[in-house]
Amino acid sequence: MDALTFLRADHESVLGMLQVLDGAPQGEGAHQSGLATMVTNLVIAESQHEAIEEQLFWPAVRAALDDGDQLADHAIAQEEAGKALLQQLEDGGPGEPEYHRALAEFITAAREHIDYEENLVWPRFKAAVSAGDREQLGGKLQTAKKVAPTRPHPNAPSGGLAQNTLGVAAAAVDHVRDRLSGRAADNPPDAPTS
Image 1 (cartoon, rainbow, N blue to C red):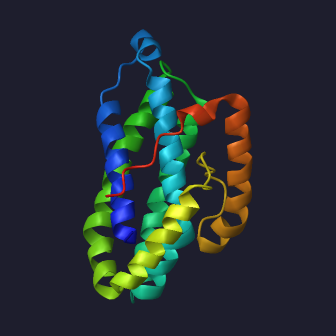
Image 2 (tube, rainbow, N blue to C red):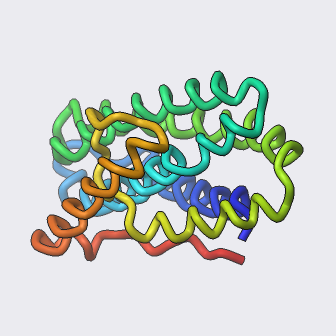
């Protein structure tokens, strides 16, 4: 599958979650609404998505485009800010003011980040990279997502090399923690790849 098609399916899944979470109940209603499970789904999906982008997609952007470093650096800065908000969600709980503030900030930031990728980076990447190379990258992204971290890790270094070493170790720990805690059941299904 083409890398951009694969990433778009992930984006559509996340945008659907954001739409459901936008205006989520607060206070007592937050506990009964299932908000915690929905947010856990979002944290898992976003953590996996950003990890594979840092591991594979942004290095490809750096290599393919003359200003790829600048584009990737901007995107990774957005992702790092998002990870910090996701960590606040991991550490908090529904009904807490900081939790709801972090959720609202993340929803806005995630939409801006997706817009940046899809409307600024992707058209240029598509024009610079052959369909065959995009297909090959898409296969790597699909494979990497299956073993990607399920938690944000905002203090871990970003970038392809870091994700290929430290990210793999963090992902292994995440998957064990998820199985032991029962959190693995909250892992959202992969977006359909049509």
